[in-house]
Image (tube, rainbow, N blue to C red):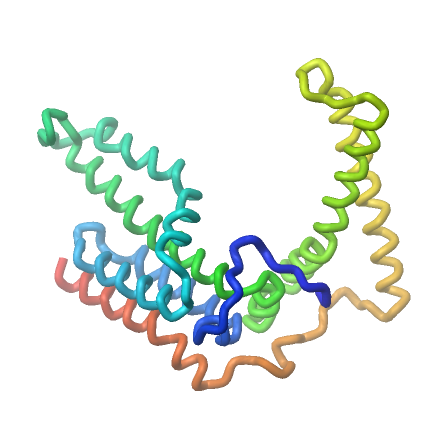
Amino acid sequence: MGAGHVHVLYREADSPVHRLPPEVKIAAMVAFTVAVVATPRVAFWAFGAYALLVVVVAALARVGPRWLLTRSAIELPFVLFAFALPFLGAGERTDLLGLSLSVEGLYGAWNILAKGTLGVWASLLLAATTTTRDLIVGLDRLRCPQIVTQIATFMLRYLDVLVGEARRMRVARISRGDDPRFLWQLGGFAAGVGALFLRAFERGERVYLAMVSRGYTGRMPPVWQGAGAATAGQWLLAATVPVLAATVAATAVVLT
């Protein structure tokens, strides 16, 4: 984990959100998402309030709206499904622009679009302001199961190694005249994937034995006890957004 790994969504900046410890950002994002999901779908004003909170956090984090909207394309399959609901839904129908649409389907489509989009935006803001290494450290400080953080740590540490190995194998294959671009050439590609798996397995065995010889007992160091853990003031600061979101959600439940 000592290597400098930065994922493609991370945006380097010196903002108040970037400086917050990762565990408080993870907890705030999860709490905000829970509040959004718990909001009744007919409380349209509440989703506008949530969007305003996201805009404020994005401005503090110096994340532009264009970047946020572009990366939101990851939810496109759910958007397509949502657009189909008004046509496929049963029950009461209503006419809109000459089309007969299901009222229940319209509500369902709105529910998916609003809550899904807000959840994606919250996740993107977390990814844009927190490095991959810090995300793992934050999960460890939140007492996430050790097996999960260990797997994520090793994947992060050795993913570049495996990608480099796959790239060298591909260059070697092409240099010998094998460039599987057609269906009948998939045999060579499948053999390459199998060889890569065996190399990765053998490398993992060597790394594990080397770690055991250096005192590894199956648990990562308890980094949540180390320096840099969130203070009470930072927890209170990060709790501002989820507390406001919870207030909006509770008000929406009472009014509907």
